[in-house]
Every structure is written in C-alpha cells, then in structure tokens.
Amino acid sequence: MHEIEWKISDDLIPYDDALADMEARVAAIRDGSAKELVWLLEHPPLYTAGTSADPIDLVSPDAFPVYNAGRGGQYTYHGPGQRIAYVMLDLKNRGSDIRAFVQDLENWVIDVLAQYHLKGEKREGRVGVWITNGTKEDKIAAIGVRVRKWVSFHGISINVEPDLSHYSGIVPCGITEHGVTSLVDQGLPVAMHEFDIELRSSFEKVFLEEGAKGSILT
Image (cartoon, rainbow, N blue to C red; front, top):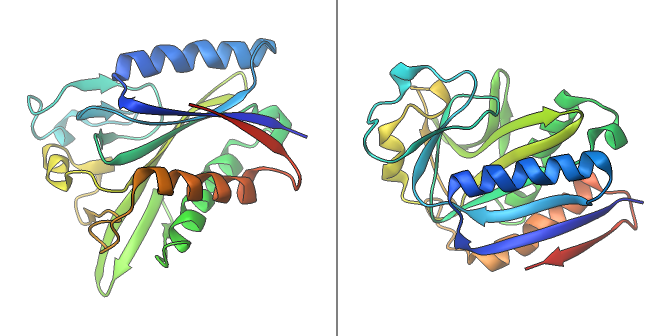
C-alpha cells in the first residue's frame, strides 16, 4: 500500500523555489525520510527549456524569464491559470519503467479531461495530450519529467485558464503546425479547486492500487 502526500499551493511559486523544493524532496524520498508527493501549484509567467530545447524556438526571449528546467522536452510556458502537478514518485515501486510512467501521466490527464466530457488524445512521437476539433488539433497539457535514482520529478501542466497569448513567445514543444488550448477555451470555465478534486480522483484510478491511501497537505 502506497501512501502519497498531496500538497496544494495557493500562491504563485517562483520557479527556482519549486526546483529547490523538488530536489530536496526527491533526495528525501530516495533515502526513505519522506513520503512520495504530488504538488499542485501555479507559477508566475515564465518559459522553461527542457534538455531538447532548440534556441531558435525561443521567439521572444525578453517576454518572460527563461529557465533551464533539467527535464526532458523542449520549450514550454507556465503561468497563472495553468495547473501544474509535480509528481515525485519512487518508480522502483512501479516497475522501474520510465516509458510506462510517462504513459500513465498521459492517461491521468485524459481521464480528468473525460470528467468534463473532453476527449484528450495521445499522438505518436508527441508527448502530451491533445484536443481535436474537426481538422484543428491543439495541445491542452504538456508533460516533462526527470528521474534521479528512480525517483521522478517535474510532471504535467494542464491549461485550465491561462493567457494563451503568452505562448506566442515560444514554439511550444518545438511544434509549429498545431496550437494550444485550455478548458476555458473549450467553453468550460472551471474553478481550480474543483479541478484539483478531479485531478486527485483520476490520479488514484491510474496510479494507486485499490484501497491505497493518501493525505492532503495545504
């Protein structure tokens, strides 16, 4: 039985502070002094560069601060109205399979979107979750993870109600032929605290064994 803590931050968390806190928590999980953690938060407007980021995709380098994230992937945007879930799990307890872990993250997003009658979809060769409207295909959630000694960190970001114009300063995830969307953009105004309830419910379906317990820290 796995016990996972949930932490919800109401204030905007500076990116450097989040990185430092994740680093410390990953080390503590690794040495057995802390429980696994899912941390829900929002950042102030910023861009992050993953390990595969191409500088040419940073269209407006002066628009917002840019951080080297250390996670996989390319450039992405974080900002208010976007729910970020940093997922710190011991993957040795889950088959030591990073690819399966990423697929579980995608399935988690797809399940929570289904609670709002949105069909989230995966795409071969494109990590993340997509929404299709006719011939138009937009990204609604980005996924970028890092694993150290089989403990994961970073995680997912889902667009609930961010300012989508802020994406114009980058080529999101290096993909030029598709756009970005959000729950509000899809006609679904959702309060963040309500969305968090659905996030946790869907997480338990995907990641936890039946009867597993967790605790929420606020």
